[in-house]
Amino acid sequence: MTDPQRPGQDARARVRPPVPASGAWRPGDDPGRRQFAALGGLELEGGWLLPEVTLAYETYGTLDADGGNAVLILHGLTGDSHVAGPAGPGHVTGGWWTDMVGPGLPLDTDRYFVVVPNVLGGCQGSTGPASTAPDGRPWGARFPRLTTRDQVAAEVLLARQLGITGWELVAGPSLGGLRALEWAVLGPEAGIEVRGLIAIGTAAQASADQIAWSHPQLAAIRLDPGWRDGDYYDAPDGQGPHAGLAIARQIAHTTYRTAGELETRFGRLPQGGEDPFTDGRYAVQSYLDHHGDKLARRFDANSYLVLTESMNTHDLGRDRGGVDAALASITARTLVVAIDSDRLFPVELSARIAAGIPEAHDLRVLRSPHGHDGFLIEFDQLGPMVRDFLEVERVRAPR
Ligand SMILES: CC(=O)SCCNC(=O)CCNC(=O)[C@H](O)C(C)(C)COP(=O)(O)OP(=O)(O)OC[C@H]1O[C@@H](n2cnc3c(N)ncnc32)[C@H](O)[C@@H]1OP(=O)(O)O
Ligand SMILES: N[C@@H](CCO)C(=O)O
Image (cartoon, rainbow, N blue to C red; front, side, top):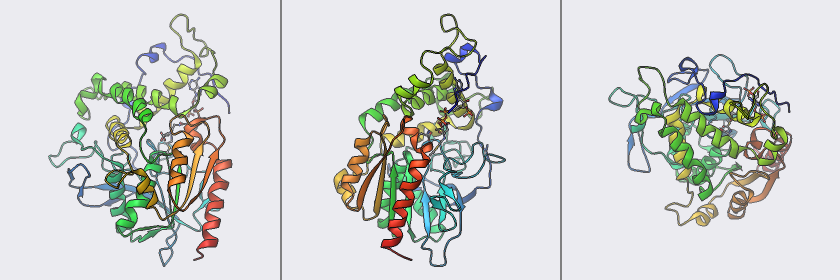
């Protein structure tokens, strides 16, 4: 991997990442070749009613006549429905699993019909805080609290609308893994079979450490004067809490990588042309500025809040007699994948999932210097793990 030492970014970026209003995320951005499902009202776990729910989604491949080849892929915190393919008109970023999903690839779209929804509460076409509330104004901070279960309940409605009665596989990393686990419990309860499950770098229950790391991220956004109590969409200066969101991403991004990687890649190198002893930055600071700035240009801060808080409340065992009982109720054949250097979702959290699900025969561990983001990088290892799992599945249950 090469690390360009980007010269010349304004050193003030250390304090307030420069995100021009024209380049920042705005409601309605990024229309793509996505499809949109109007799913009606949804009663949420917290008792609120979301009167009109839309989920954006993409599909890849063709659904068999018997509907037996449907696969659901669920994205992480800031991902979206664009799982594969290039960036381009309608897609700010290239597909986040382009190496994993496609003809002949581990999630083979010649064989499977792959469905990828944008999560409820997100900002890439699904109902979220930037959507219009019944009073004609954006929901903003009035958008109700969401849980993982609510997100999956919306996806159940989508599956029904698509005529899918069972998933051959539900797979997801990180926040997508939280939903995948929830699907494995809620899906069968809702009459949608989940035959296979792949949970990557994820957890059955948010840990204190994860909640702790999220805490300053939430504050960074809410304390940005541009947040305006969540109602910034129509701000006269066009500015939202872009600096707060960028700082949140910088904190998060550090947890997605490892201390060893940062040391190896950046060490104490100054950013090219800058002097950290005056007003310049170290290269690692510039790297974080870059990732913070990049997210603030493509993501809505209120969605970041809603999704982060949904992760914090994630608990597969809530009202189900605890995590162990919930895991024990999962009937899907399961592959659990951890990343050895993941400091945000450490291997123990995956080990607990693998130990608790009766049909989870395997805990596979990706070796990676990159930490949590390994699931977006280590395709040479992840691809064969997924292929192996699906081959065994095929032998076990030929169609
Ligand atoms: C499942 C999901 O939902 S996924 C959502 C996934 N997408 C994201 O998370 C987007 C954020 N991107 C990333 O986190 C990473 O790029 C990954 C995980 C996708 C890939 O990781 P890596 O290949 O290790 O990329 P890395 O972390 O080095 O970042 C590369 C970027 O940093 C920039 N960079 C590297 N060093 C510096 C520096 N010193 N100063 C400024 N920028 C720098 C590179 O120019 C490059 O910029 P670009 O992405 O705009 O082209
Ligand atoms: N980089 C990933 C990490 C969180 O899973 C994302 O933003 O979705």
